[in-house]
Image (cartoon, rainbow, N blue to C red; front, side):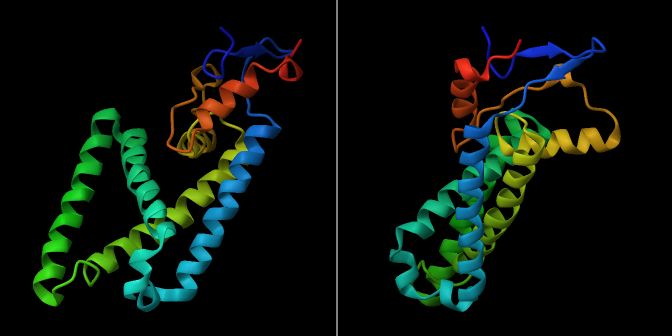
Length: 192
């Protein structure tokens, strides 16, 4: 089977070369990076004061961004420390949100108050900036799969410990791995 996790070729020197993403995958990543950049810009302009307004809780974009941010916490922990830590990090973040919710209810009688709004604002802004930057790295490096895998590959390359034979396309919430696999199967992506 010829997928991003198994497709490799030999260069002129006989060295193994890692499979790279193509124009469709990179365009998809660029589109999402732009959306995250616009989200970060919007959050910065609004500031915490604008984010904590009651009408912000009614905007679906806030909850979509927060949902992806929570999954990014899981993916980042799983990429850095292993699959078990992904679930633990997500559970920890949800527990932290629950404690913040109890504190907000006790202090203000509303869930949409500090410390919940502080926590969500920080989570959403951090997600938009960090994952947006990771997507740009993913576009430049061309690593298939999750954008965090591209950051890991870049770090390994800078340390001189990168092994092209170990390139994999880890799954991610944005579906990059699926787009990469689809693109790898296209005839126009075939290599001699």
